[in-house]
Image 1 (cartoon, rainbow, N blue to C red):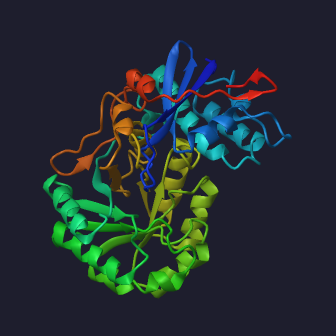
Image 2 (image 1 turned 90 degrees about the vertical axis):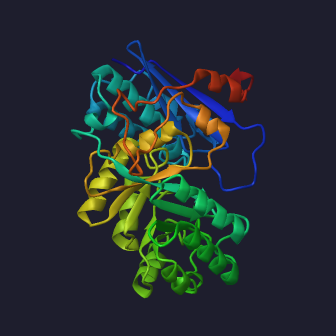
Length: 384
């Protein structure tokens, strides 16, 4: 079959708040071919990716993403890889390209899996989907008291692991310590605690080292994103100078950038988003490399369950990578995108859906409810 049509849906909450919550808007992708439909989601600034999809050619390495995909053959996994290579070469000099294509690749794989009547992970060579221990992914409270309350609630919901992140953590030593004490108290001593600081220290190793003892005392499983994702030297130095296991990679936009964070950053956990790194196939390649280096692969997801399923596919059958990010503070938009959801079992685990494709059913009423009307015109010619 051929890829016959691609549609992009820019969705948004009525108000976008200045908070580290990526579920406030979304860019949903619909790909059609052979009488079938595939769905995906970009982890992206929606309008930026729409422009990336339709923009006029600037030169041979700055083409609209759309032109490398429409009418391409889609009959097997190698066809998807060919499309991926073509997009990268033809839109290489547009920085947004990985964000845009990643969600499209998810939709293409969903379409192909529907043609083959199998889950996406089977296309990748996995025989079965293995449960992953879900860690509740939440923001720190605005106060230590709020953090304590959130931790208690996550424990009551039977999570065995919880990750706190962002807000203002990392700016004040005393406040940071209070939040860590509160998080650990709320979880008690037996639950895993992870901390995500959202690259707040940039490339400042000393700021991270100042918090080594308090993070160690809180028994954190990992410290996530202490620096920018390409600050390989800083990651490696912190790994050498501290007792902390480091995690990172959510902003890696290619297989190569993720591999380099593993090679030179000495992270113990590599966190990959199917909507950023190039798609699901890219995630599978990163997973295989990570595990060969004794690094655990973990999905990054703080948006819809469409994106959660997509990010799980890359390591669905892995026995070495055992953890999964599970977003617990989604806006209604992200929850409403799908009619079905991935729920954890009594042991605190989730499993990549066993159904055909990525297994998620799109709620098209939600697409209408949250849709933003967008038109892009150049010299009165409508591009979108």
